[in-house]
Amino acid sequence: KQEVTQIPAALSVPEGENLVLNCSFTDSAIYNLQWFRQDPGKGLTSLLLIQSSQREQTSGRLNASLDKSSGRSTLYIAASQPGDSATYLCAAHPSGNTPLVFGKGTRLSVIA
Amino acid sequence: ETGVTQTPRHLVMGMTNKKSLKCEQHLGHNAMYWYKQSAKKPLELMFVYNFKEQTENNSVPSRFSPECPNSSHLFLHLHTLQPEDSALYLCASRGQGTGYGYTFGSGTRLTVV
Image (cartoon, rainbow over all chains, first blue to last red; front, top):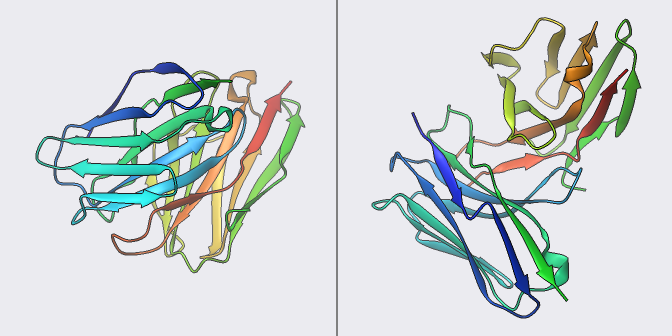
């Protein structure tokens, strides 16, 4: 059974800092992996999707990597801004017919 | 807007009421999901529909009743809820293939009084 762990649970950084959020999963046979952002009381916004055949995806200041052999994914945020403050969720998709398995998230605070 | 629309955004209901949550997507996705998110808890999968057929019921109490009349619409019918059912209810959809991720709606904030 796939399990997803995110470390750290919470992170506070000063504005402008580059940071890395970590995600690990127990079963390397994944369909794809998705990173989401959630603001308090809101829905989930998809940030990046990495297919099983890919190693990384980039969107603006965000870069996500995937290493299936080690069961790890990282989300790199460059030049962090206060508007980046949110909870970031990592989710592994075990197979086409099996629903996403979510981590518990990393709550990020970027201090101006 | 993400392409997945949930209504209403907020709902307050008494324990004896009957209400319904609605989710609509016109992304051409064939799978739709209901999730529950309680305060300070991780997301809980409730129901999964593929091509209008329910393929997963994650041990959800019968006071929650889903309905999927077509691939674009998903409902969650609520009756005789308990205060502990107060939560953010999220709908999501997904297309087929590894290049398709989940698209979530903005959620319905439900308060049971």
